[in-house]
Structure formats: C-alpha cells, structure tokens
Image (cartoon, rainbow over all chains, first blue to last red):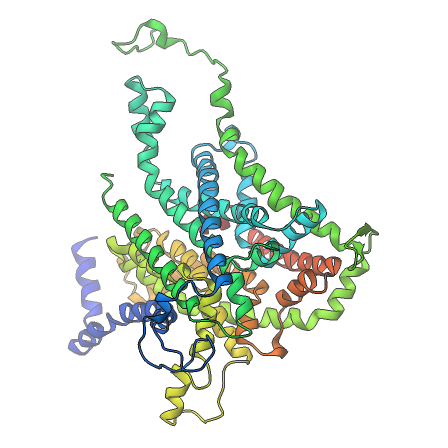
Length: 288
Length: 304
C-alpha cells in the first residue's frame, strides 16, 4: 500500500472532522455490549433456576412457586425426598456416562478416519459425512420415532438398553464433528519425525497423537455428556420403563414441578460448568 | 542415471517397492467401522423401517402390523393434520429468523474481535445446554407467567395492561424456540464469518471502502452460504420440536411434533405417526438438497 494511497484513504475518512471521530468512539462499544447482553439473556433462565432452588414454598404442595418467598436451604437438605425424581436423576447420570464412553470412543475413531484419509484411500467417505450431517440436521422427532419403530418391529423391550443405543446413535456424529474440528491444526510432521526415530505405529499413537488430540477428545466427550443428560424427545420415545430425568420433569409439568427439580438442575449445571472450565484450562496448558 | 541417495540410508532408497500392506490399506475403513455400523443399524435402518411402517396397517390393540402398501396413509394424515404442519412451519420459521438476526452480530463480534478468548465466548454460548432443555423451557414458563418476574414487574409499573399475557399464545412458543435454538444458529454463523479471508477485507480497505461498504459488499455476501446453513440447522430441528409448544403454548397451537408423539405413544397409531414423520424427514431432505443445488454440495458439512 503506497504512501499516496494511505494518505488519500486517511484523508477521506477524516473529512468529517472531529464530529465523525467522536461518533466512532462510542459506536465501538455497540457490538461488545450487545454480545454481552445476548450472553446474559442466554444465562438468565439458568440464573433464575439456581435462584429459585433456594426459594421457600408457602403452599402446602411441593411445587415451585412463582413468587419469591424467602431464602431456604430446605430443598438441598431434602433433595432425595421424591423417589421417582431421584431414581430418574441417577438413571440419567448412568446413561450419560455410558453414552459418553461409547460415543467418544467410536466418534474419535471416526474423526481420525475422516481427518487423515480422503479420496481413493477412503471410498465411501462422502457417504459417511452425509449420513453424519443428516443425523445432526434431522428433527429429533424423526430420530425418536424411527428408533421406536425399529424397536417395536424387532420386539425389543424399551428400557435402559434402548435408551443407551439411541443416545450413542445421536451422539457419535456430534463427537466426530467436534474432535475433527479440534484436529484440524494437527501437525503430521511430528508423527513422521517419530517414525523416523524408529517408533512403530502404536507407540506413535500413544506418545504423540493421543496427547495432542486429547483436548479435542475431551471437548467431544463433554458434548456427548451434555447431549445425553439434556435429551428429551428421543428419550421420550424409547424410554418405556426406564424414565430419565428430563422425561420425568416433562411429565411433572402438568401437575407442578417440585423444587428438587431445580436443585438437581443446579447440580448438573455446576458439574457441567466445572468440566467445561477444566477442559478450557487443559487446552490452554497444551504446549502446542 | 543417478538417483540422489541420502548418506545415512543403505542403497535400498532408490527402489520403491509398492508392498501391499493390509493394515495400512484398511486403516480408514477399520477406524470408521464402529461408527458406520452403529449409524447404519440405529439411524439409517430405522428410517427405512419408519417408511415401511407408514405403508402398513396396524392393529392398535394387538400391536400386530401387516404390510399392505397403504400409500393412501400419507394423504390421510396430511389432510388431517395440515394445519399443524403449517403452524409448525410458521413457528419454526419465525423463530429461525429471530435467531439469525440475534446471532449474526454476536457471531461477528466473536469472530472478529474475540482474539484469544474466542473459545471462552463460544463456551458461553453453549452454557445453557448444561441445563436440561425441559428445565430451561419450564423456567421460561416461570419467567413469562402472568404475575411472574417480567410481566408482573411491567404490570406493576403500568407499562402493560393488566390482562396482558404471553403464555399460551403463539408468541411464547416462538420466544421459547428462539431461545432454545440460538446456539444452533450462532455456531454455524461463527464458523462462516471466521472463515472469511482477512486479506480480502484488507484488499477492500485498500480500495478505499468504508467500513460499512466493506461489510455490505464483502463480508455479507461471503457469509451467505453460512447463513443458509445456519438457517437449515435451526429450522429443521425446530420444525419437529414440540416441547416448547406443550409447555409454553396453548391448546390451539399444536405442532406436528405433538401429533407424531401422540400417534406413537398414546393412540399407538404407528402407521399414521410414521407417515407424518416421513413427511417431516422429506421436508428436511428437500431443504438440504436445495442447499446443495444452490450453493454446492461440499460446503454444508463444513458448517458443523
């Protein structure tokens, strides 16, 4: 950019003088303020939930009340008072852990395949990618209804197993996409250097590849866990006798949800936030 | 005919024998085998089963189904429930547009001004997902209730008439959908905006573009594929959503998802539910194919 061009450009933007410059100074804050407002708006209902988990209930029923009645720790002490809710919560936790383990392993393997091999070395890659995309983009009703149709046709009783099968099915694509995105900066020459130094494939994977893609895998695992804990629609279709936490809450919305729901919600949220913070910190400490 | 040979290798470097090594050849297929199998058995095959169920006739009492190639099922279901389809399209469309308008500035800000804290901000966008979807919607029911935090305060300040209500109207459903699906819109938009080559922008500034011209004539057109992708990734899932409507809406606003859920779980009308679900899937596929035709089939997978 020549000096003439710079001077001309500078001259053009400054023709309006000090008035223009003053206006530009505060307009610089519009975007950040807006963005923080949006983030606040996203977090607002969660704040309300956490706040109201400490709310007293003045009516005789075990229901959350809309008005603020005063601070209490009662619901945290009596967190296990409602048996259906507590068992639903633990079922969701077990389900989420199992689903995370399976889908992270399977999804990471898939991501490795997608990142490293293309074209003639990996025939059918486009087909897999399109299937993954369809899995992510399809409405959950369709996923849940089709799985229920399958389970009915093969006469598989709905319960924990069907829930697990369904959860892994919709999580794999998300894990693969997340891990693949984190792997895009991966430097193959590190592996080649190790190979030059005499390492075989297994050692390369264990000492070079795996530690470097670990943040991506953790992100994928976190994604799988959140998807599983959060899932309602698909779970509703295939749960049957085993009732996960969101399905229980949905059933209770008609009659009024007990405050323990907010207690559990707060607990899940806190754990999730801590895991997310931990994964960000681990990502920062990577030497790459 | 001399071939350059590295000093510390023995003479075998010059001859490259193509040895067929099955392990290396099969590597991509073996790696993707578990995922491929799982998706085949628990995603693709159920879709086929669903299609075939829509053509069968089932006895709700016994649950026995017989394949009768009942193509008329589609026509019947559509004539029964076309209102719900239209309502769903309206709700999902309005919510997606709101999401697009709300998300674009924040995606732009994170992409251009996020700096090293980009991942942190993206995480902030995803924070609501750590609380169950149902709970979030229930809390919105809370917040939007007639005497609740927001409306009650506004009514007490006499900014709203006393009989104003949002719950049990279509607007509450749209607001709920727009809230719950915001990250689905913001993330693809962020990916699209982040991909813009900054040198193109520098070139525009070099050619005397003002900031506004640069935005309207360079940035915005380059993000159009991303906007379309974000639209699809929000509209299609929102189309099938029914939780927002059930918790926040009224009895007159049933969406197609509710009908499908009732068919499968309450009335046990498997063919009917499957037919509706197939139609929903076809709508989704049409959207994806439209994207592929207009904007190129490779690109939409990049926005995930």
